Image 1 (spheres, one colour):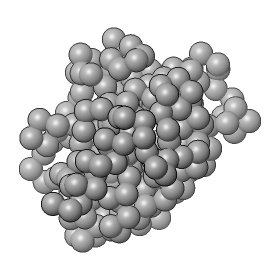
Image 2: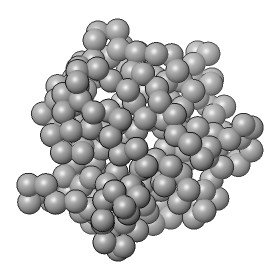
Image 3: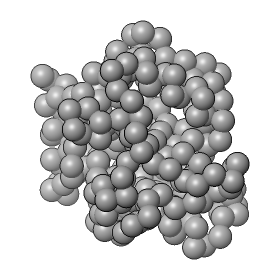
Image 4: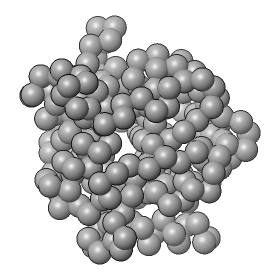
Length: 218
């Protein structure tokens, strides 16, 4: 109950624009050997864009939260990325589940190579749920910026279309999984990933939509 209340207060502050101190978002640190720390400039750039375009009051620097730590409950939005292996222990899976059930939100962004691992680990978190494709009519695609055809394709991997998958707990989208899209590459500094300007703008707008959905719906 206390953890639920913390998340409610954080989200209320974000909606009202009165977060004191500024609301923070975090990147998920996980075990297994995958590069959880990838896309180092992505979240700061998304934060800057969202503060400017949506009037948010997010702290300029992203934080790091370990999957098994109660620090998760300090952040209404958690970003997860990487290219390789992911392993959640039973305690970590339980902690992440409690965070999500309590009002938290996890955005998994496949940076290529994450898919076969994250699907197995999410089953540890919600064994009773299946990842399903989020319909294009879902409000996550229709915040300030409209994406009537779902996720934009930012970075080419295997020639597959970009897809947005989700885990819905009691009707609420608690995990959004951007696959074959690589939003984080589009958020990165231009010097790191030379993404065309149009694609970069699409990535930032979709990212802002995800934050907006998280803060106003969850």
